[in-house]
Amino acid sequence: MKYSTLLPFAALATAFVIPDDEVMSQVAIESDRSAKPVQDRLPSSSDVHNVISEVGNTFNDLLDSSKNAFDDVLDNVEAAAQKTRKSCHGAAFNAKSWLDSKSADVEQKLKDVESMKHGHHHKPNKTVYELISGSKYTTKLAALINEYEDLVKLLNGTAANYTVFAPIDKAFEKIPDDAPKPSKEQLKNVLLYHTSADFYPAGRVLVTHTIPTLLDGEHIGGKPQRLSTNIGIKGLTVNFYSRIIAIDIFGTNGVIHGVDSLLIPPPKAAEVIQLLPGEFSTLELGLEKTGLFKAINDTSTHNGGTIFAPSNFAFQKLGPKINAFLFSKYGLKYLKALLEYHVVQDQTLYSDAFYKAESKGVKDASIPKGFFHVDLQTLLEDKSLSIDVARYGRLISIKINAFSTVTIEDGIVADGVIQVVSNVLIPPKKVEGVEKKWEGEDLEVEDLIERLGPFTETESDTYEL
Image (cartoon, rainbow, N blue to C red; front, side, top):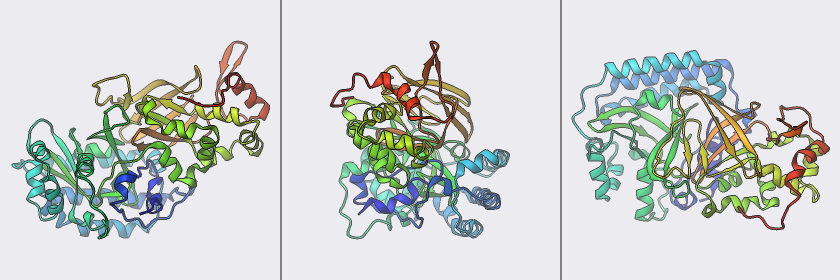
């Protein structure tokens, strides 16, 4: 199948994840949305208030109904889901915009959920595997898990408090009847991608942007491939498209959340940029013309990384003269230097976790609550980006060079992460021996040449990472 069916949900709101091409040829995810630019996705205040109010009520209803088994929870889910959908009026919105203005509401909802959770569940007496295999709603998932003795042993064991995002049987109905059967290795990777070795009950999911899974990321130094969680028109979702429809089914060795779509491991960053022309066609053109696209896509040269990706709108803000210069034959070497300033190798900075390629054996370096600062070396010689992350629960702000803002966080990809930025990042220039950072002032072509010129003098005909 074509990737175009995946694009609508891929770049909505605070994160995007597009399934891996190899697996996506065999698994279809439904979508009823049309792609829109970021600036067109902002909500009205009344829509936002209604949505979050009903999402909170839905979670409270689900928590009330939780009896440590799927069947008891899911029997009550559909009525709650219909209640939420009726209040949403079909309006999509940018979750980050809502979070910035509704922080008090969010914090109160989280407190309410935690209070309900601790007061309304019984002591579990089954493992997460036993709960899945014993439910009438997860018979297909159980059948898949049963094909792997090591997974059965894992989910029955006590090595960790696991979190399983369990697709219900209806999720498998989205797979086309004529789809070829994936290989056993592919299926196992998909199952591992639904499971975390960390304990994430509903309250923690709500304040978390990304979650590590049991799937080792081949292109991020073997560190855990991550999921993203989002609050949007569908309520709480995983990887933007899979709605959480049942929460906090507790087992003796973890917790289960029911989801309505399969979670598919993502492709590489270059593919995501290529698949989202509505957001990144200018960036893609620049990467192609400079040879950087091929270099970035070659994961043999790096383990993970972070791309600070300017949207088409960010390039438009530079003005027609600078864009005409950068994409001219004469300006190509300056364009290459400019784009190198947006790419970080071997350091993967999510909004709530930080992977370093040299940190062998380090599974998850969490970004603490409060403020976190890091300087990330870019592909541009001797030039780093100054990153400041302000994090309080789900409320996160990422600033670059104390000026530019990450507008869409945590575009999870197989070889790192994409952070969408509000402006094209401009390298600093030296004024009387002191580096002066760009702070949004108008640029002329001459000024851009002055800033980028020192990095183009040794330009070679070929590019190698």
